Length: 460
Image (cartoon, rainbow, N blue to C red; front, side, top):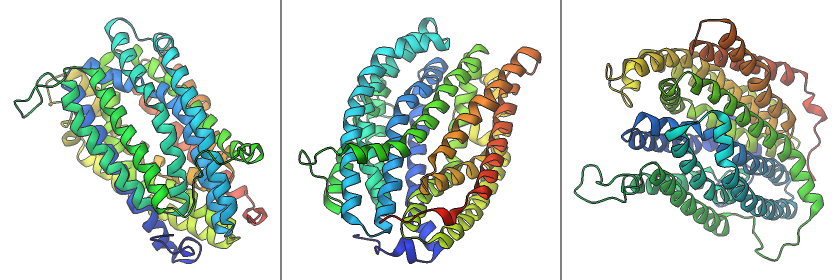
């Protein structure tokens, strides 16, 4: 590799390996989250309804993106395992076939998503002007699905090699492109300037995002071509269906887990929307705030996939155990600090989106949700850690069970019960989120203790 020694992940000091791979991803996630915050601030200047619409469509978009994420994670796991086993020819073969898969599925997903968007949004409960805004935003967003998919494929290669700094660099540039284009596309008069914008409103935000995704995809392709030891043979690789099947076996549970979770969120958002646009806006605001303080934990979970994968491929099972223990300790520290920060500075964080007293109902609901979020955050860190571990060892069915079980077997039944048999109102949703995260982490811990890591076979 160009920056990391090829044996660093399998032989380097464990804490250094975790932080070397995680820190760029933390910064990357922070930049992406700050972009989302900025993007949300621009849309929020239009109206609360516009802001709520961008959050409302997220689960549907995620259902389709989940397939690309699944293939990317499956490819990362397998490529990293073969890199750990020093079988570079096999790693390259898996990378090329993953790109072919993701190219075809990206085109198909964009077409299907665009055509089905209005029906699904109506089914979720969107009506009148809210339905029109959500549909316009989502259909334009689906044009960018292909770019998302292609990026996931090339990102998998960089992740497997531990080239996380390159991923961060690309994401920073892409986010800056989006932030620059947002006010130009959204407003008739660009804020803080005398320049005239395109005045596209909420659709402008979607087009700006697509432009940034296109730039991100081009940078990912260029980076793999220039810096990776794995070469993509454009138009020359003959599809190997046995390799695609192997990728699919690992990718499928991950994709089902993510899409099942996203599909569950469509139901959940339907419940939230039934309480009114103010509750949806409060939920969106709270999520934007808490996303900001959970990115370090998410980054460690992402880095674990390649770290665990390479060590499994090299047959370093005792090292795998030690890596995971140290990773969870780091996650615990970050999660504890994040929870305390949210509790202590909840008002200051909320004022990023709404002025205290300007909309009492939204402020009240967002304030209550963010208190619950402080505890939800704590368990989300461990959720990410266990997910990265299961993906790294190739046991993606367990991360699938976590994803689907959290929504479908715990959270949604609880929300439905509270909604129909209590007077808790939106508070029933916040309680359900907290309990479901706790029970999912508890389930993951039980599964982890039962897995015989010594039975894992190194790649050859």
